[in-house]
Image 1 (spheres, rainbow over the protein chains, first blue to last red):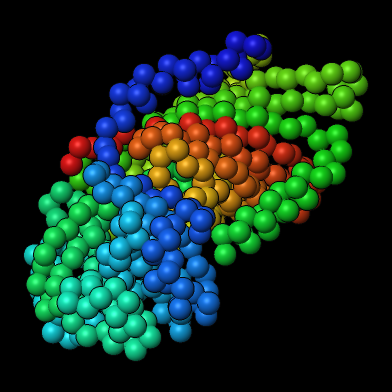
Image 2: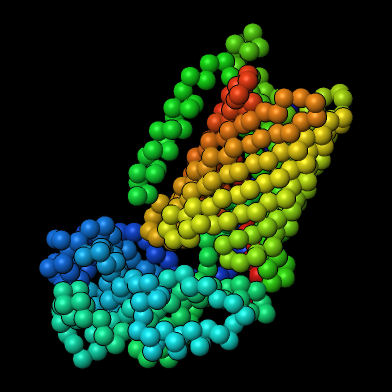
Length: 195
Length: 234
């Protein structure tokens, strides 16, 4: 009997070298953090908005050579994501939108770009605002308080099918819908819900 | 939202395991390797076994007794119809009572469709299965529907060295030759841990009610599963 019980345990042990060898790919890692772990400068900037916001969550993102802090919340039924560098300087403000709510000029250009693929399906669309000529505080007032969402960049998560099959990408387009960059999204594995 | 789902399902799991009486509990252990071949094809090979633990009331002796109920190998081929819909066919060979004197076996052919309804933080999915089960001298057609929910417990994405929660409910229906067709239900919840990009270990508890419209055989299953996901380099 004991030897039968030992079979799965032995197999797990035998699999360890395979597991170790197979760790290769790097990717962005996001960890939920407490408010105390956020940079103070970031919290000062957010203070006017968080008192009336809901579902407030804080994250730390670690990528190759780049760490950032993120605060996500819902305010006036809009979902915002505000990203900061480790010193608490605002990097960008993102707001979740429906893909059909994008300005028609940008929307049409994005669709034209995606038509190079055999098929595509939108997963998520966000408007992205960076400080540029505005100060950090001015940008927050403009986007969150005044709800002025003109000339945003567009961050689109889209599943596309080409000759290699289906893949999911996070693509960045400028205010006119001109393609700027993309990175592959590693989807959560489905083996534990398939079998 | 995740906190509420977690609490409700943990309460449901503890309630269902409460009052087991003299019911045996069962341990199922599996190891599965998932790998991609070609653009939209993936394959899953797994081995598993089930050990049944009988408690004192059932066997009239002191101490727990265990016996190996089966050992099996499974092979699935899955085609990604689109990112949220996958179809699979599978084959299972199971040695029943492998330590016994008589030789019992089972062949099982599976067809399934799996749909992911929601791909964000809380992932909702459905799985519809049709199975043809051949045992030594019997045949059964089985239909199964499973609804699952899973989500990472730290952050919005599941990253290495993080835990995730998974829960599901599955309804089963068997069509047997010249016999009553039993219904079954399997409610399950558990925790998984992602070691790296490719490997995760999952521990779950499943409360199975077999043939619940008649004799209602209830058993608690403890399931441990190791998943190894070998990704292509593309």
